[in-house]
Image 1 (tube, helix red, strand yellow):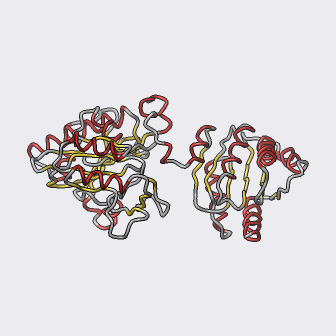
Image 2 (cartoon, helix red, strand yellow; image 1 turned 180 degrees about the vertical axis):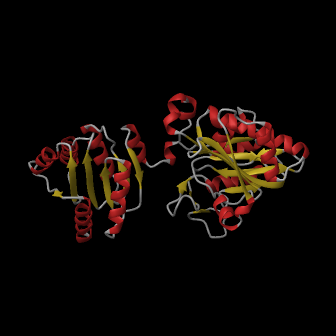
Image 3 (cartoon, one colour; image 1 turned 90 degrees about the vertical axis):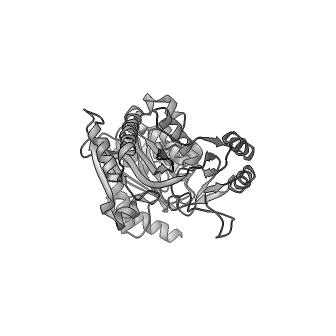
Amino acid sequence: MNIHEHQAKAVLSEFGVAVPRGYPAFSVEEAVKAAQQLGGPVFVVKAQIHAGGRGKGKFEGLGPDAKGGVRVVKSVEEVRAAAEEMFGRVLVTEQTGPKGKQVNRLYIEEGAAIAKEFYLSLLVDRETSRVSVVASTEGGMSIEEVAHNTPDKIATFSVDPATGVWPHHGLMLASSLGLKGDLSKQAGKLLGQLYAAFVATDMSLLEINPLIVTADDQLRVLDAKVSFDDSALFRHKDIAALRDESEEDPKEIEASKYDLSYIALDGEIGCMVNGAGLAMATMDIIKLYGAEPANFLDVGGGATKEKVTAAFKIITADPNVKGILVNIFGGIMRCDIIAEGVVEAVREMGLKVPLVVRLEGTNVELGKKIIAESGLNVVSANDLSDGAEKIVKAVRGAA
């Protein structure tokens, strides 16, 4: 689960992390009030969306020379003007894709006198089962760009969960960023605070870009991106309450209610599969036959008829779907359960696009019989290759 920058900073501040003062705003008047509370003389107006690259982003409906989603202004009147221009507009960045995201909230923050910028992140290293620390002197830039152009400017090390952060970790961070004296001590203290926040709230990613040194030699977290492990949210009701569903695909939200693994994509063939590996193989073979998958959807090994029905409804709710491929290998999952769910969903919603079903495994003959006797216009496939070829031909023929 992702949260907004202002929420991330609020979480980090609970662990003692130094962040600039700021207030979230959900209207122009709230933005103005926030600026008045801060008092100036410099304000930063930040669009709050779940995507990076906001400063370089472009707002739809504004000219190519218009400013992006992060603006430095010097009066309350300029805060009002920026807020009026940002609220309700779609901001397109490198991470949002061409569709962009609508700005529904802003963060009004005090300005900072920046002397240096750094990059710092903590993330889970699944190979070592440790928290990895990634640091770079190239703050304010995309870490992917730094890795491609100047990989020598990225330093990484890990923290053993059995020991947590020790003084030598702070020294390693300070050395990586070229910090000495009091700034080196601040780096060690900051790393301990960030690690404590990371572990205590079950984060999966904590990215600070940039981490800055101010003109008076203080380390400050100027921007923060935080993601949490969805599987651990049951332990953190306060964190779960920060979820902003307006930033998520409605189909993905609906899928989460039924414990379905669903990710929306940009293709035209909807997929319903059991097992993540088989789902990936299904998507690959659709591409092999010249089409694009519209989603990743794993109904899991213990899906019920209700879950299958919900999955089918979610797929058909996507207006881009021109055909559906159901690919089930029944091990734990029974093919007749899948068949009953598909039949029930089609009868309830109607079938407006071609549907190809490939079943194999437990109760496969019963599953095929249920579909055959349903009277539905469903095409059966003998294997995965046959199913992919048939659905692509059906979609291409209907196009």
